[in-house]
Amino acid sequence: MELISPTEFVKDTVQTLQDYSLLAVQSVANVFRYPRYFADILQQADLIGVGSLPIVVLTGFFTGAVLALNSSSTLQRFGSLSLLGQLVSVGMVRELGPVLTGLMVAGRNSSGMASELGSMVVTEQIDAMRALGTDPMKKLVTPRVVSTVFMLFFLTIISDLLGLVGGGAVAQGLLGMNSHEYWSTAWQILQFQDVFMGLVKPLLFGFIISTVGCYYGISARGGTQGVGRATTQAVVASSVFILLVDFFATKFLMAIFGYR
Amino acid sequence: MAAPPSAIEQPAPSQTGTGSDIVVFEDVSIAFDEKQVLEGISFRLAKGETKAIFGVAGAGKSTILKLAMGLIKPDTGHIYVLGDDVTQMREDELFELRRKIGMVFQESALFDSLTVRENVAFRLLEEGDVSEDQVEAPVREALSFVELENTIDKFPSELSGGMRRRVAIARAIITHPEVLLYDSPTGGLDPVTSTTIIQLIVKQRDVYKTSSLLVTHRLQDAFIMATHYFDRKANEMRPLPPGARGEVPMAFLILRDGKVIFDGDARELAQSKDEYIKEYIS
Image 1 (cartoon, rainbow over the protein chains, first blue to last red):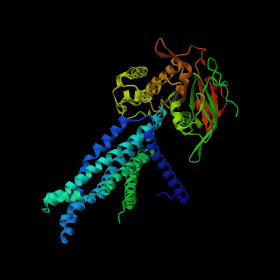
Image 2 (cartoon, helix red, strand yellow):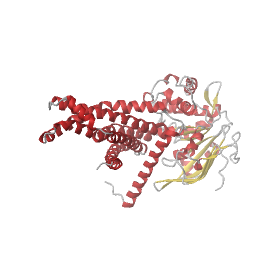
Image 3 (cartoon, rainbow over the protein chains, first blue to last red):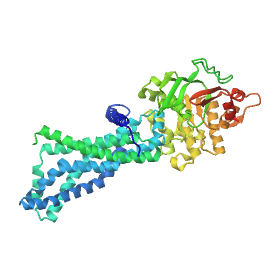
Image 4 (cartoon, each protein chain N blue to C red):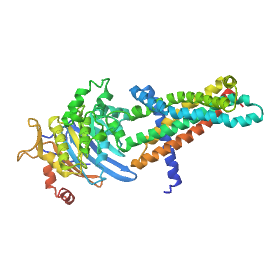
């Protein structure tokens, strides 16, 4: 492994942060600039949203199911199995639904974006696009950011619902709970701030997934090996970034809503 | 730095006149990772002229084209393209300028997820509010120029290397740009395909009078261009009649160690006393 001097490391890190920040800002600013690529946005929405549906459905359902299964023994010990619906509901909507959906979509799409754009960079297709008078930031990055933010929002809702269904299936099928009791408690416990918190996060995570994926793709260097490296880095960085932002967003939103 | 010598004889435009210069490099330097690639180079490309750029691998030939296109910025110096200083322009201003320039990349750089039709039509579809039906005629015209109309529905991966270069030329010329930049258009191709590509470049030079910079490793390609013209009636490239050498607007530029060591026409090149140049062209 090549050793890098601390000065070079700091310089590289600052450069990376600066380049990423510029890309992130430009991707948002381009939403308000012409030309707008609606066809590309729709195509990406299909690829990212519809394409991710199977993994999101499976993840949501089984997360809810296993959450119910794991919690049931503890709740039974205190004679509070009736709270299972509340636990699954709050857990899925506030935390597990957004985070796990974000991580699954990051694994699928952040890597996809990095490899696709990285391949375009190393085969000079990005330069060719610029030479043809088209801004790759507007044509390639902004549609991916808009689509990911938009679609992750709805994917999270689907994941939350499937999680509740999974929890309900375990509650009814394995634990013998009354279906009506499970669903009514699950519904009643949810407050505005829970739903709000659960729906703000996918917007942040969608932005992270797409901008990190596009950043590593656009900055890929060194042929096919470089593209492979960019793909891996994109998944790792977006996943870590999601977990970090999740903590700070949760803390911030809890402070706003007066949670203790 | 003194102005470079006149590149070619009449009827090529004068290089000292500013009005007829399409591309002007003034004392341009650029380094990558502390390696000096270009060091204070200056040259001019006159209107209607084709200038072939030579040099060993890593001499900075492709860098010159990317600098002219504004894809990268020099460390020092100025580059004027069609009267605009590309070194001082923002990226969004450059997009406007680039619409007047066509570029053929070394490895074609066709968009691999788009068909030949979509690749060639890309610029037209991006530039205006036009439908795919409206671009069909110009796309077919550009493809017939490179004699590849039958590939219109294919993907780049289904084409040979030579065909991809020709599609890249069709994509570059579809809007009839004022300047064309060719980056090793014959690199890695067999002699027959190379001659086909050179014929297309000569056709573009002599029929449409497009100014161009041509990066190549193959000296013979540039000599063919300097000694042939395109016969529109016969629709093929033909040798210039004896004594008519220098009648085509063709110039040569040789780079060595980041500097321009020769800038002139075929006759001057052949008469050069420089040992390196003599060895290079032998």
